[in-house]
Amino acid sequence: MIILDRIPIFIAVAEELSFSRAAERLGRTQSAVSQSIALLEEELETKLFIRESKQIRLTEPGEILFKESCASLGHMESALLQISDWRGLKRGTLRIGISPTVGSSLLPPVIEIFCRKYQGIDLQVMEILSDNAPDALHSGIIDIAFGILPDNASHLKQILLMKRQSVLVSRDKIIPVEGDTYFEKTLGDYPFIISGTGMLSRKTADNLFSHWIKRPRILMTCSNLGIIRKMILKGLGVGILPEPFIAEDLACKDLYAIPFQQEGKIEHAGVIYSPENEKIPAVRELLQSVREYYQISKE
Image (tube, rainbow, N blue to C red; front, side):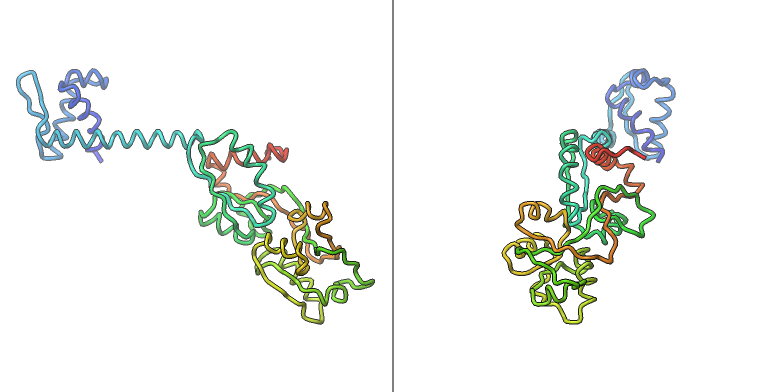
């Protein structure tokens, strides 16, 4: 709007109460300043200044416009300062989606590096199934995701950080029956604790059970892998969990893995983000932290 273009000139005149001093301050001619104020008064159909010989003063509408214009200008300056701080990573919000399994192991060391540099960023971390991460990125629910890399998401960029498979685990060491390829004879009488629909370890379980003639004993279905792990540790059943999730338990022999031939491919885990989000300063710097920790060169 033309009126908005004239406001800075109006403020200068109102503060100086002099056309000549306002012109000098703005680096314009006095006639240009006077003409701008005259046009502003014409557009508003209101006198803003009372001119008395060599002095001027604000009218009541002029006082109103001056007060509100200064407040608006202050808000604008504040907004520009906040944008500058956002660009400089002194403030802002970064929304990170993590899968319940690999995300929790991939993210913490990266966050440690990031937070040492950018303490003003508000990090909002939320659990999202890997299958749902592309849609969450597209809809703007999250800015970046850590989880299983999707197969059909050519519009997204990915960084591979880990390869994994799910493993059959139990509290006690179980010796598979010879020739029992799919463990129906070995585990047919054991109760199973399995993950929820859509989770990758559940897909592995469903694939295994598809080869069984007898229906498996399902003690419980749960979407919280931590709860599943604790129940298996208590000896309440056996289950299928991602190897990185229970790596420490396996190393300490609190849990035992039962090796089995999986028909599914090895899962690739890492970072998923959109090319547009890479323009967000916080996303860009988090990716730099990923590359720094995992020693990955930028493409």
